[in-house]
Image (cartoon, rainbow, N blue to C red; front, top):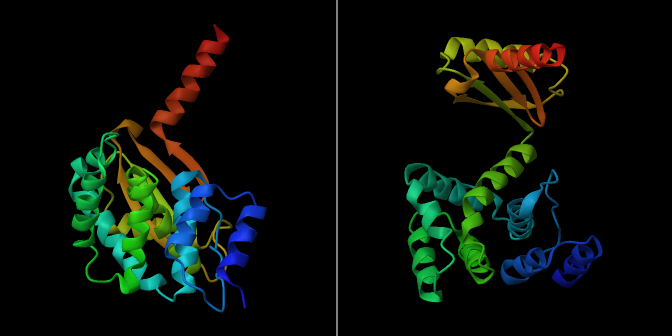
Length: 226
């Protein structure tokens, strides 16, 4: 049986940042099995997301935490000002407490055992509330990886219709980029700057088939030739 002390020693031995150790100490409870994050994440938000994943798995609250963070992420999507407010360097302890109370109202009653509440308090104590939006996104990546999902992001100059997206999904699913038994999670992003064509991101791979990329390559060839 792995104790919290054992887990913390292992994290320190692996060179985990102090914020990760603090995060696990604050809201994780002893459990028989330690479930490691299914993939390695980078950046401070990735570190916090991984710590939360480990703590939630130890307390068997992964699904409820995932639903809570998805609800919080939806709030960020609807209110762009929220992220700006949380980045303010002058937030007092009272301000942070009020923000946490407001955020809790948007967890949809899914925060079993106050795992998310304690996590938010850890972020506040470390002056990291501004990372919350990124943590929500990174936690979603971890949950997707645990379910065998692969992110397929298609960026186009205009919104693609469902028929086109389905054809792309079917083609990618049969490609070498998707392993057997994996599921694709398809997202269509719109960026007029691509001009035409597509930018296809499959997990950590990017295939740039955009007109803007072709023009950039053409311009480089012309510049090098002159």
